[in-house]
Length: 516
Image (cartoon, rainbow, N blue to C red):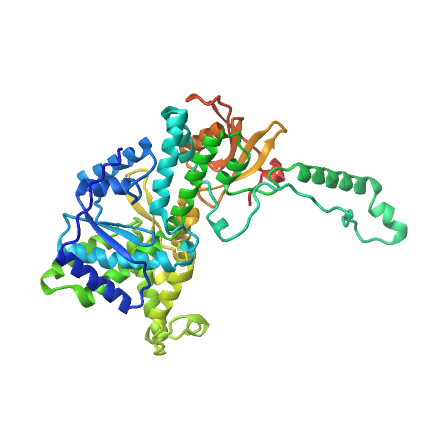
């Protein structure tokens, strides 16, 4: 897809006034946002920008064209429509679709100010680059130079592999210093074999020399393995490990570094999707219904807002889930319905009637917005009452009828399934555990099972991409159909890389390859 996005239209006087109103109302409520540049785009340009992730310029690759076609067809077939986009940048850029009605545009503007406040104030965005508009343009220029020097086919093929593994990062490493390829220097001088307590004259019988020698031998073997282990500990930032250790050409290192850089930029958005959309929805609802909505706009607004928060049984709508939790937090903290004292109330109706007049709800949701991500947000604030009120039950497909049926109403099950879905940005936990497997320079990765199995088809594509970068046989240990399986790719950097699968005994798997 070429960079052919049409020049945006300047805001009309009416829209400029609506933006000024939305900005003032947001500021009055205490939202702290970047300056926002709003631009109006036609339908096709909006779809192109969405395909580019909100940025006018991205590096050349067929991937963007595929994304554009998916978005366009989704709109054509009535499966979804883009009303707005906002980019985490300073200043923030927000795009409005020119076909929106005035009521829609006002809703979008209020929504955008909520997003910009979240980008600026949520701790998980604090390490992101705030000049990403310039960065993505710079990345496009650098990759184009590599295309000119080594050829489009080689670059495109390498980017294909990088995109397949772009999620293999460690989002928490932005806040923690981890070493991804250091070797261990184990301490052994204080080690002593384990002995059973015994009187001195019985010691040689209770703790025979043969048993102590076996322990010493096993310990020495463990020390030897630890000294030779590479990496010294399971490494979650697979992309960084490959950057430092894979046999890559300089141009390949540069491209992989760009892909990794952009993955880390987008990671906080994936980690806070529910919170971010819920926060923006909360504020567009508050600002519109209290301040900006004219009488003649009520029906149009109600129709649009109901579409935003609609959720089918068993579905997943981050706007709906997020805003319901924020509203519940505000209501509970306004009345003091939280904490150990409230939880100890056990008389009939006592909890429902309780109100200590504390009125700290607004303060609390601002605090939550500042420090939580989706996993901690859901884990702490998704209550059984919210689940029941919104019928957020766990559903499954009945194999006999093909219909979705309720599998469980248990709030603990519902919460756990949702946490599985959003943990690690919805991606499996994969670690490099051995970069010299079998002492042959082969790469061994292991999946940390958290209750949900890996999609086998996707795992195969990831394994192929890893093998292309490592250029040696590559292995991935994972659970398939409740059995531990080892996938191996021994290809030769062609489209016909062979994938072998074998069942392995979990109990006899080397300790270094077990991810708990």
